[in-house]
Image 1 (cartoon, helix red, strand yellow):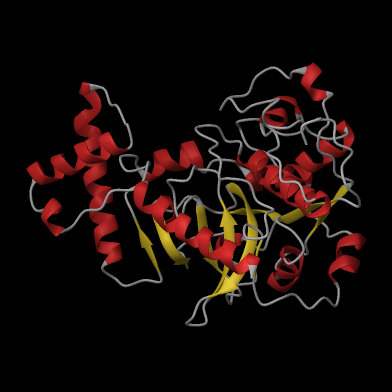
Image 2 (tube, rainbow, N blue to C red):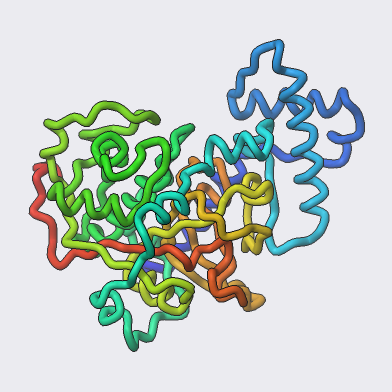
Length: 356
């Protein structure tokens, strides 16, 4: 009963937060240049967006295009809806460059093909996962964070999985440092992208990671703070890869803990996603690291993944997106089943932080 109550409270908070983080508009707002300018000014005020006078008209023209796209899309009655979010006056190309440019496929090619480990196959073989699970409701997911204009999604994806397994094993939910990975993991590219698999390797070799409060996020890559590098508040034992193109194996993994995955997140519909089960369009050119923190099924039978993003709580369903699960393509929607990895941890952490 306690879990059900928590889930209801979580649902209510998600709805209220989503409503507060966006502005609504209707056909009247689109009828004239004057009404569109009024809508643009409302949007800029709501999101505290300042623009130079010399670029204001350019930004307005982009905004106008995006508003009409959102309006026409929402009239189609799709399984998901779009909204005016923080990205309202960015072209899709600008959005891609700033927020979906982690070059995950590029880094994978440099590393070579990913192989599922024997540990992963043994761990998940023959399991009968529950029909639904939400690690948020089970207390294993921290609040949504924001990577900003830094291609560090790989670090945020890695940290979600580490925070999850740490809570599952220790019953303590703590916020772990992404900045330590951005600054100190030389095997990855800081704000220029990276791989979650290599980030887990760094954590293993380093002996752990510091808490976020000790090595806070700065939205840019800086010099590695060696003194903080030695603060290993949270540890993992290893990491394993989920077999590619196998949503059943992915479901078995997520049933046990949050899992780091990569997707293609650069489409216009993804840019303005608001709520509901996202079904595309999207390809499989992996350009963004996220984390699956659960799965479920809608009343109409539509199956979905619960995915935590790192674009702040104003995007999507309070920072989350439901993505269609068990589709006909083996790669999964937006390539979600082609690159998945999670950390392992056999025992409770020996906490360095006395406050924990």
